[in-house]
Image (cartoon, rainbow, N blue to C red; front, top):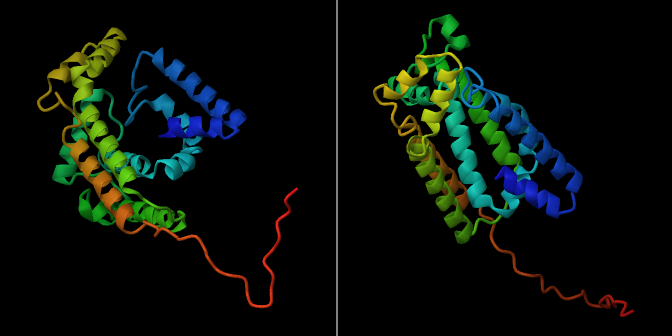
Length: 253
């Protein structure tokens, strides 16, 4: 959706801004494509691509206004996966290692927080400061977001985008050999144990647990937008001029 927003930004006449965003992203993608580690080291995604995310976020408001359904659905997916990866084990080194996110979430094993220093351990009783901050941020965003009409067509587009993402995230990395290709690249760089991770129990489809959770979050976000943020259609005003006043005369020239 960020790419769609960038194209729309260009069409609206903001060509310098759109070309700057596209140029920065192209440079980062080109550099990351030539790096021997697909993830760029221990990180929840391609480490060298995170620097371009603030630039991609600029035109998201345009995409949200034009395509609210898909934007909301995919934003909920992004927030959910990022939060789960952050609170469990964000510093994964390989694509297939992302399977630990679902496992740690299932067992309630999270990263230590300030509550852990006071004896809360690393379970649900310790992760609440992070979840509270994240929930507060979502509430503030919801309160400051302008109301807009969520049509049935937009909701349908959001559901379609959500289904496409879930299918791709769950199956594509394995079926297309993306994970295997990345492991071969890491192995060629000198880590001869990387390929063994592909045979790790439960890592054939690393995101098969996380993807349904994120998809449910997307469905919930669409439902909330459809019920709460749906602005009623306003009829055009048919008010007549007050008695004793003449209606304004338009200049016909």
